[in-house]
Image 1 (cartoon, rainbow, N blue to C red):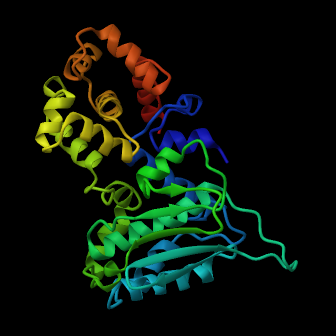
Image 2 (cartoon, rainbow, N blue to C red; image 1 turned 60 degrees about the horizontal axis):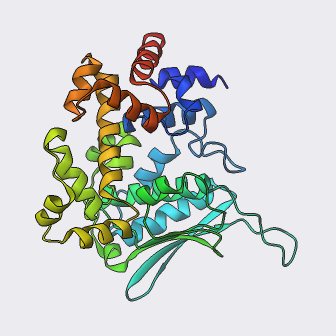
Amino acid sequence: MDQSLLLSQAGIPLDLLGAPRARVSSRQYGQLWRLIAKTLDDEFFGMDEHPMKAGSFALLCRTVIHSDSLEQALHRALRFLRLILDGLSGELVRDEKYARIILHDKPTRAPGVFPAPKRAFTYGTFFVILHGLACWLVNRRIPLLSASFRCPEPDYSAELRAFLSPNLEFLCQTSAIAFDAEYLDMKIIQSERSMKEFLRDAPANFLVKYRDSASLTARIRQYLRETPPQEWPGLSALAGRYHLSAAALRRRLGGEGQSYRSIKNDMRRDIAISLLTDTDQRITDIAAALGFSESSAFYRAFKNWTGIRPNEYRSASRDTTSHA
């Protein structure tokens, strides 16, 4: 497979693969997801013995769209995926308070010998697809209380915590996600008509739309997004906005694996990438818009965020777009 061609078609500079801290937009990531699935003719990216052929996700949506409740839809979805995938089998378990989707690895033929765990990306992809579908069906965020993986913790576990749950554990007996059981009783509110729009924009739409909007981190990010960076408040002023002391705000954010400094840095990085990719603003103007008093400080910060300088990032992005 020509990786450089796929990256180019998705608008992602090849050089970014050598920058461990580099980031791309959800639109670019979603486009790359679709391109790889189409090229492989496998919407599960070759991670199962049996390919999930292109069009399977659309058929999955049609299979569940007329369900009476989310519980029925998830049972149907898991049954469908068991038919499609050979190495994984999902099970929905419910008690009075909690619902769990448990992901079983295909057992070995040897008695007493357990299958080796799969990659974290394999389990994560299964959960992201299923959770994104469930959130869309009821058109609301379903907060995941926890997520567990059989495999060792990968170096990108922070991304899995953002997509799934801050309460993430590894080297567990089973891979599973858990949420409040009351969501299973919700009615399906989507239709054949809305499904067409959903499929047209998937997966970029559910990769970001149904992130955890109730967390303090998400609320702070939303506030900062609506406020010019030059006017972002200090920690004490921000804490007062949420009726907290500065110490309490630190503790709450720490419990979500974040700090105010990391949130601001991530926001500045995301805004900078968007402006460099999608606008012709001068780098000096971008630096000023992000609250940097000197362009040199912005250059140092951007290289620390992504591993390359802002002018190199813009040049690589433009070269990729012109060849796409």
